[in-house]
Image 1 (cartoon, rainbow, N blue to C red):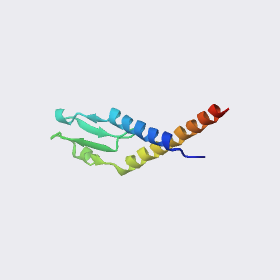
Image 2: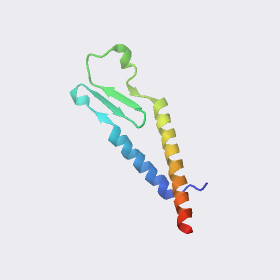
Image 3: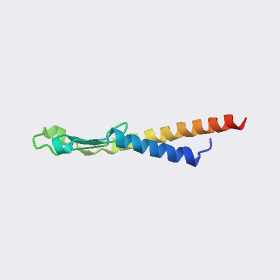
Image 4: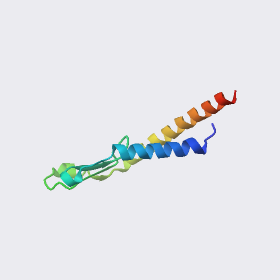
Length: 92
């Protein structure tokens, strides 16, 4: 399968937009900052009263970051498949 530049860049931009849309920043109101799509790979809070066991779950999660990158790779793969199918239909 041929990897094309246009669907790859479009897929990366769309995936980045989904990360921005689904991220939450409620840190100013004793809430959380969550970044990532479909998995939150970064969590932070400014809350002073928090369970010490939960505090270990804050920060950057490398496993979820790798899962997000894998989801991006699958997204780009399917975008390229759809691109190649549409190009082959248009050539007929």
